[in-house]
Length: 146
Image 1 (tube, rainbow, N blue to C red):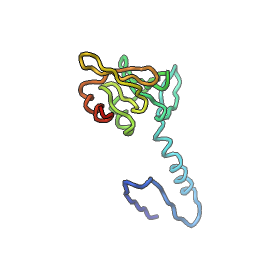
Image 2 (cartoon, rainbow, N blue to C red):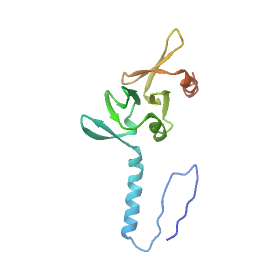
Image 3 (cartoon, rainbow, N blue to C red):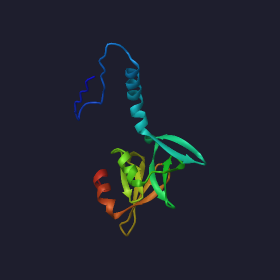
Image 4 (cartoon, one colour):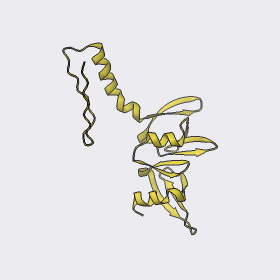
């Protein structure tokens, strides 16, 4: 069997299999290809003793509270075993770090509020709010053109 790899930043990932007949190995490769994208987009969370799969597309933000990392989806909050550093490695550019303990999905931000002291708060569409740290303020301003 031969393996070819072509790197192209503009192309959508695809796999082509050329073979004489469909074998169990070909079926296994097909199965891996069909589940690859969905596995990467799933996140497993805990809720009242249950383990639930969530799609990253549904997540509003990740935040820390009482030493645990929570996932906010709509008006519900779930616990995850991931750390914020692991979350940052897992998510794509649609998420942005708000402070040391909060990673937010940019399109879920409803508004920013600024206090007299210059501190900035972010309010999400689901009602959750958190502060923007001084360390991340320049990234936020650059990202949203503020």
